[in-house]
Length: 154
Image (tube, rainbow, N blue to C red):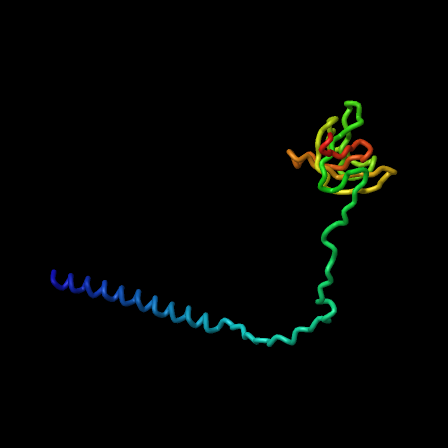
């Protein structure tokens, strides 16, 4: 019985040794496969000189930032106006100046706006860009014939 236990232990030790030998040889062949894979050679290329730009292109030329103050019939950019002379029908406010451009909304008689752009002459009409002081979405171009500048008297 004692010999059977020794024999069984020897067989188990031999199997474990064979298993480790298998792993060792397999690992060596795996490493050899890595050594056979070609490796890339990196070549560092130095940067050339950066071409210089003509100094004349680098000079800043000041441009006019403020638009000239233009006042026509008491209306100018920054002034308040009201819609008048539509006989209650209202005034079509357009996306761009001109009679053939898209109508954005209808401004009511006596409605007040701030002048934010213009004047622009198109289709024989003088146009001002308006924005409602209470709603920036109510903005567009209106014909000057139906605008009255607000003063302290009116």
